[in-house]
Amino acid sequence: MESAVPANRTKILVIENNPAAREEILHELYGLSSCEVRTAGTREETLQLLLLYEPAIVISAFAMPGFNEFETLDMVKTHDRNIAFIYVSGSMGEEKAIEAMVRGARDCINKKNLKRLVPAIEREIEQLKKQEEYRREHEELKLFRRILTYSHDAIAIFHKQEGCVFVNNAFTSLYQRLGMSVSEAEEKLFSQLPSLHENLFTEEIEVTDSNGERIFLEQQVFSYFEERRKSSYYVVVQRDITSRKKYEEILVNAREKAEKSDQLKSGFIANIGNELRNPLNAIMGFSGLLASQTDKVKQQEYIHVIQNAGEQLLKLIEDIVELSRIESHQITIREENIQLNELMNELYDYYAFYMGQQKPQIRLICSKGETSPNDVITGDAGRLKQIFTKLIATAYHYTVKGEITFGYRKTGEKILFYVTATGGVFPAEILSCLSGTSSYYESSPGNKYNAHLIGLVISRHLVNLMQGQLWLKSNAGEGEEIYFSLPLVTGKANQTKETVSIPDWKNKKILVAEDDETNYLLISEYLKETGCALLHARDGKEALLMLSQHPDICLVLMDLRMPVMNGIETFEKIKE
Figure 1 (spheres, helix red, strand yellow):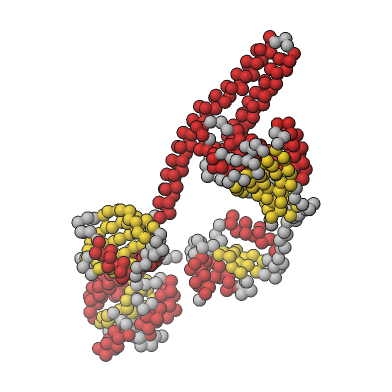
Figure 2 (cartoon, rainbow, N blue to C red):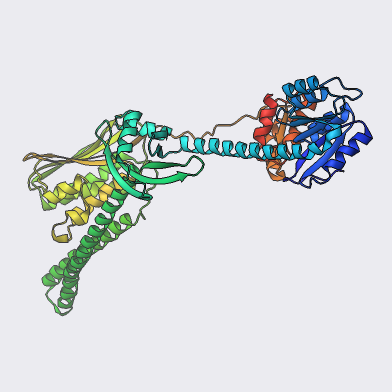
């Protein structure tokens, strides 16, 4: 087996069937350490080495048995027109030499003057190096141009004297948004470019698009000197940072809001201590009096005060804990069917009795909508009752005389709940809280505890968690109306899962080109139940071989990254 040719050595193929002549040529080439030489004496050897050896230079005799005139030259140029071809002959006349040069030969050397062979080869090697360098530069230029063209940043390149020489797609799109043509944008930027002494600078600029919207750009300008052309260039890169600026603004606002909220919370916590002390003082004080009091009537009065203070304290603690749980996202909502009419009856029975005792001048009305047995509210019955309780309590607290009506009705795919107070007048902090424009700490005057305000904040959060909305309709001087809506699911949820049928591919043959055994095993497991026949190729060349051997393959699953020949190259070969 022949050893592989080092990448930095030039491959030379010598085509000569005469052993003595071949030895003369090899003797001349012996001193070329930068070259690797192979020889061929027949047509078959020549074709095989052209295909497998891939020489850069071919040295050939002119007249050989089994070859027509110029046949070796035509054979080489047909295989690869870039191969440098040199004739070495003792019988080629001047006319034949001229025709050979016309056909593509690089040189024709007489066997009597073989000393010219090495300089000719060295000249060709130098030319090949220049061609390879040019090819690499050309490929790099194509790659860089493609990268620049499809970059998301707007890029323009300007020659110092000649002006703009390149703009990419993003540049064109950006200035179209700004209502400018590409030529106008080029002229404007070129006139604004700094002295080349300023090597690099970055700045943020603000512009306005054709719709009047603000656009923020991060602009980089730098210069470079191109040695080969002895030319100076500017490069302008503009990146749209409008989204980033908006996010920065959002973060700044959020930070300021958080800082303000922390300050308000601190004030609230400082004041809540007084609210806790008041009922505690009442409980402790009247408990001491109760121990020394013998009058039965006084004892009952003290017990009543202690009970009220205990209920007040418990309510305060419950509200604070609930508010804290909401703000720390620790509230969970259960999904269950809610019997609305039963819930309405419970609320009415409680508040009708309570109002009858405390404010008989207020009339309580419960308006129950009509629901069919299939109507299901997705929500938490306990939380819904909690919301109604707090809304009714607020309406009751701020109503001196009139009617309080609560109920629900179906509106499309939602259930609309409401609490109205015809004689109620809500203060500004309640209106602000119900409108959802402020937090509890912002709404509460002086950061003081307000049971009804906390209750409304809790209600608003609970409605949001139940995928609903809460809003207020205030009628100046005629009462207040609070509404909230929750989703309505009609009928029971369908629990039947869609089944996926397994196709019958028993007569199908699939080729899987995958070098990773684990990935192949996974694919084969997925396709096992279909009954298809699987073929496994571990590289692109093996896949091409299997495709030629199995014309009945109906599908190819190809990995893009494989040894020997990758997936993209293999697909191109298949298309051919």
